Image 1: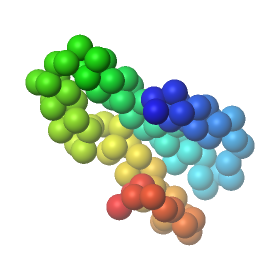
Image 2: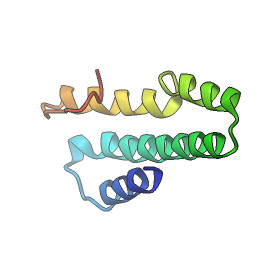
Image 3: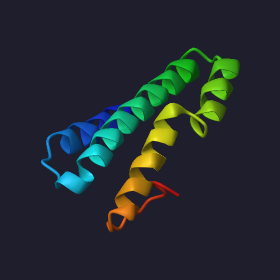
Image 4: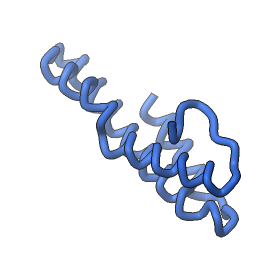
Length: 90
């Protein structure tokens, strides 16, 4: 999952968005890479059967910088008139 999320971030990073979406696009790239890192931490904790670490990372996801950044990006895109789906920027 983490590699797929990183791949999506890389695709977004390769775009040339309109000026009114460029900052939000960069934020989404950062957010997605941050989420991918968290997914890797979850996978490592699961592999090591470290339930405490798994719980810690999982619970921290909702308030993580990656989620905050993604939400900010979504809100910026909405303010610029773009339609944003999949929970980004709620």
